Amino acid sequence: MHADEVPIASETVRALVDQQFPRWRGLPIRRLETAGTVNAVFRIGDGLSARFPRRPGEPEALRRTLLAEAEAARRIAAVATVPTPLPVAVGDPGPGYPMPWSVQTWLPGATAEETDPATSEAFAADLAELVAALRGADTRGERFTGDGRGGDLREHDEAVDGYLGRSEGLLDVPRLRAMWVGFRELPRRDPDAMTHGDLIPGNVLVSSAPAGVRLAGVLDVGGFAAADPALELVGAWHLLDDGPRAVFRRACAIDDLQWERGRAWAFVQAVGLVEYYLRSNPPMSRLGSRTLERLVATG
Image 1 (cartoon, rainbow, N blue to C red):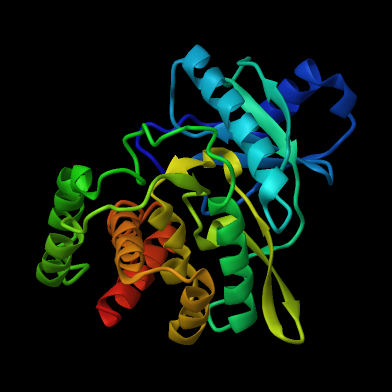
Image 2 (cartoon, one colour; image 1 turned 90 degrees about the vertical axis):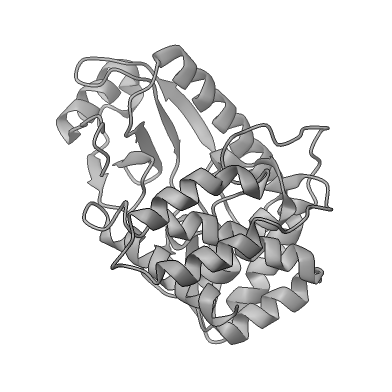
């Protein structure tokens, strides 16, 4: 999936688990084929999952990141309206894998990649309730300090320009460049709030009900942090068609400026998916294309 990806085989995971966590020695190990781009994921028995970072990093720095993600997971679990994974352990580097790795509880269910909630107004209402709960959590005085999504839109100029430059023939690049000119100038008026930051189909669990598809859980919660509250609105375009998106917006009760900044953050994320994952992760590339189509249609 990445040119510098660190390979990890099921046999290696088996050996690492048996050596470092002998209490799980009798549990089966199974690799999950997912569209996730950050971690390779393996089931440990029925109740646990092990996550191995795909890209190389300095071990001690990565350990600090994994411990911070574990704390973020505990914080989001305390306020989320649906189940989220809980941290269990951090593993050490070992033969066949040179970096720390993590173990968390396993949440059963289908992702929104498998069961599409795009037409479900009940799901849209559930999503709005979750977003309100997360954005209402205590920031503990923290502010956005990273270089990813959630700070200043204009800091993504170079990345967006590069993605679009490599997307000729795949996307309507002139139109998307014109959209970005408007997005990057949107002012910021809202203080930072706590956000999941990556509400895409692969990170959302759903269930089927008589009233339609419902939200059943949220995954990949280690990025729960303070950021532009509009970042949490990206799910409106990654997950919802027009009617349910209107339900979501009414339930969120936000003004036009924050709604547009949510569109802008969805644009930043989507435009980076199409070309980069075209061959290595087609579902993620298609997600980018679909989100951009929705953004263009609502522009």
